[in-house]
Amino acid sequence: MSLTVAALVGSITVFVLAIFLGFELISKVPPTLHTPLMSGANAISGITIVGALILSNAAFNDGDPGVAAWLAFAALVMATINVVGGFMVTNRMLEMIAGKKRKGGE
Image 1 (tube, rainbow, N blue to C red):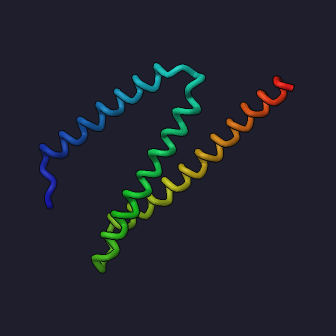
Image 2 (image 1 turned 45 degrees about the vertical axis):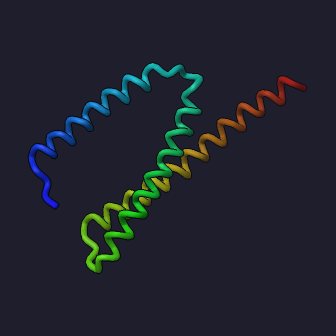
Image 3 (image 1 turned 180 degrees about the horizontal axis):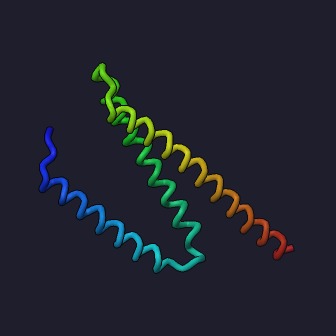
């Protein structure tokens, strides 16, 4: 499988357009919706974990783990840290909101 210059330029173009589109979409989100938005982003990182597991399994089964296998392992570690940390932050935010509701309702 070889990477042509046209495919590389096309991939970089899509990546740059996705950066600008993501920035525009996120900048339009009101501050009250940032926590649910981050929770959704953490769930998407779970999909990254599945992809990294599949890629690392395929790379390590070849017998000679190369750069792709180690990059998949690094992606697995980073995505796991992101998911766990993100859900911990979301849990803290929800506890703060639940605490305010209890104090206000009493």
